Structures are given as structure tokens and as C-alpha cells.
Amino acid sequence: MLRTPAPESQRERPRCRRPRGAGDARPNRRQRHHGALMTTAITRIAGVDEAGRGPLAGPVVVAAVILDPERPIRGLDDSKQLTATARNRLAPLIRERALAWQIEFVSAAEIDQHNILQATLLGMARALAALRPTPQLALIDGNQLPKVLPCPARAIIGGDASEPAISAASILAKVARDQHMTELDQRYPGYGFARHKGYPTADHLRALGILGPCPEHRRSFAPVRLAFESLF
Image (cartoon, rainbow, N blue to C red; front, side, top):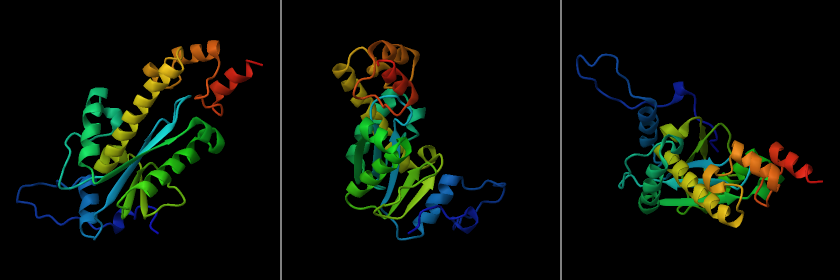
């Protein structure tokens, strides 16, 4: 099973005839990558990304998306480069136009059980396993892959900015997690989850010191562990 990208020297590049005077302009990385994929029989390509590895509270959320080439979506980009307004506009378009999409929540308890990296990889495996139709290839943001997947996969560093399917997944994951943290703010008032989404801001750390951890805090993370120990 193919698990890592082929070396750049072994990838097939798209053929293009340059007009005279075109200079040394060359296809960019995205064009080269998709040109190589189009020469194969692979058509169902899933992009996978996560949101919420760094926060002290809440789940890590993973999304997998198979885009429909017949229904393009303009404006896809790394979710971190988009405003909340843009993400909230794009998320329903992705859900409507994609061939398939799946969102998985990996709880704070699972993060504490497995560690944040393994919990994230677990969410990626779950999301891909739940996709219907099953993808022929998965493009996963980052430099590590889950051990068990339903299809071949490639890890792509910075893929959320270079691969449209990964960009779409990053948007779905971010929007879903932000909405979930807003709901948790109602369930556990006082921490400010709706504002900081669980990240270790000064306000969050101050509230954590006063109120102590709630069930949604990740006790394997040092600031939460210290706050918990201070209660005894």
C-alpha cells in the first residue's frame, strides 16, 4: 500500500507546450501534482485534515472530503487563512457539493488515553473508513499517516494550503469544532470556550486556575494537569 509521496524526481509531470517568449515559467506544485494524478485511473481522492490539536479543552475534530470535479468550489484555502465569515460560507457549500464528506470527533478522554498525535491519527482513520464511496487515495495534511486505512494514502506537509480536498476538510473540521466549543460554553460557563475555543489564552488559564478543570479539559496537557493537582 502506498503510504508516502513518491520522490519529486519520480513523479510524472504534465506535458505543456509553451508559446515562444513564455520564458522559464513552470507549472506550480499543485499543477504538477494534479497533472500526475490525472494520468492515472484515480478519481476518488479524499482530503483529510484536523482542527484542535493545540487547545487545552474539547475534542480534536477530523474531516475527510471527496470533492466533485463537476461541482467546483471557489475560495478553498487553509482554514487558518480564512476569516470565520468565509469559513462559515464555504462549509455548507462543501457539504452540498462534495461527493462525500465525514466529520469525526475524538474526545478529550480519548486524547488523554492515546495522546494527541495518536488520537488525531485515530480520527483520520475513522473519517476515511466512514466515507462512502470509499476513496481510492487519501491525501492527509502533515507528515504522518494512520497505520490502518481503507485506501492508499500520502502525507503532504502544508497540504491544507496546496490541495483543494485537504483545504475543504480543514474548513469542515474547523467550523464543526468552533460550533461545538460554542455549545460547550453553554454547558460549562465561566471558561470562555466560545471566545478562545479551548486554546491556552490568558483568560482561559485564569479561569482554569479559579474553577479547576471541567470534564472537557485534557488532563494529559500540562496546564490542565497542574490545575487539577492544585485542587488536592
